[in-house]
Length: 498
Ligand code: NAI
Ligand code: MG
Image 1 (tube, helix red, strand yellow):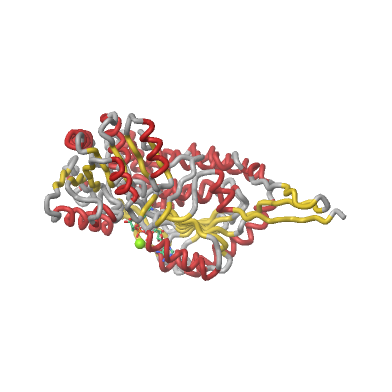
Image 2: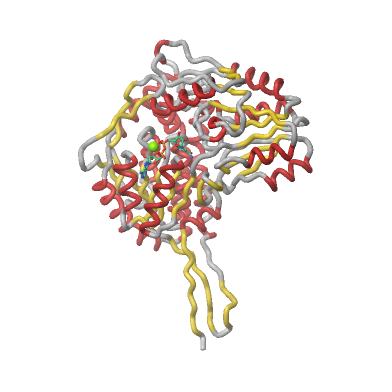
């Protein structure tokens, strides 16, 4: 038996062992209702295990436990909390490969190009915030010489973290590491489609953290997520997902007057000027569109504005690159592109592709090949599609597709392309590709986005503030600022010296 099939067997065994559990107060527990829902391998359509089906009763138990644990955790010194996070990071790094295999199994994200990197980022995120706990400091304020005036950062309390399926490990870590570092406790609600790899991460951090600091529930949005947001002891919600759910959460949080951080969708522009280094831009298009992840990314470069003088050769070069990529078994090291997450998303992506095919004058380029191996005949593989001849005001250019579908739009004029790039309901990320540095700098000032990159397209990194404007959300993640501004409140203290 090869190493990769051994790894697959181990991932299946791990999925079975984790099945049907929440982690509350440091222990595996089933849902109080005793019910579960299936977890499906999207590459085969087969069930690999199940998840506890959480409801309001489980939410109440988990939040009550988290609330009790919070007082003691906040009293633990900042340095000691930081050490604990670093120890979590060490153990997460030790187990990164097994977590990556499980992620590939339950989400269909290819092991070499996607799942392994994401699993490694979890530990990095814990060590990043573990090193920042001494930065949870306040100031002295020159208010009145007779009054010693200072500020102090305090944790908020119990934080609810509601996460999606597209990068569940990374997006969970970006939320819970800063929250826990700052002295809060957390109750996580995992995504229905990807509950297991995140559960394994929480099992590992519970070997280090006091019981009740990191709790995790699985369940659906209305049945488990909504009561979590509404629970009176939850004092902050941090969410990544769809715009509609984000708005619903913001409204529910407004009822309790608690803060929210929202990381919602995107429709990110990539501008390729006529003088750009074409091969670099082509590489950037392939990685920026996250073809290896079937385009299931909020920062996907799904609007490519390419100067008319180079658009034909650009399209041919991107086509050649993506055609050379192998779509197939997510657990196979030679696979570049895995699957779509679920049948619902698969149908949704196809409905957008059909819509594009109907646009008069549009051309579709279907790339790479779905696997021919009969073992994957029920797999949710979609051939990436590049559309040309679809304008920026068409539905396909305006709505987040969350699949491997990109519109390549020709432009003539720099002023016009900046205007088109900004003409979107979203404003998460943007890139510009050019050797004219004066123009590049001008674009960095004028593009509306939380993250603007010139001649590169790297993904979220611990240390770099990440978050969008408009319908892309509220607040920042991944940075020191994210911990200070989103997981603490500042108390002002005045001591009369007179
Ligand atoms: P969703 O927003 O419904 O789900 C995200 C999380 O929110 C899941 O854990 C879900 O259980 C939870 N949730 C759903 N309804 C809730 C409620 N009423 N109260 C509390 N929690 C609730 O997103 P979904 O349905 O998985 O995907 C739909 C679309 O959303 C995608 O096609 C994509 O366009 C977008 N999306 C964007 C993401 C991003 O990274 N910004 C991530 C996932 C989806
Ligand atoms: Mg939904």
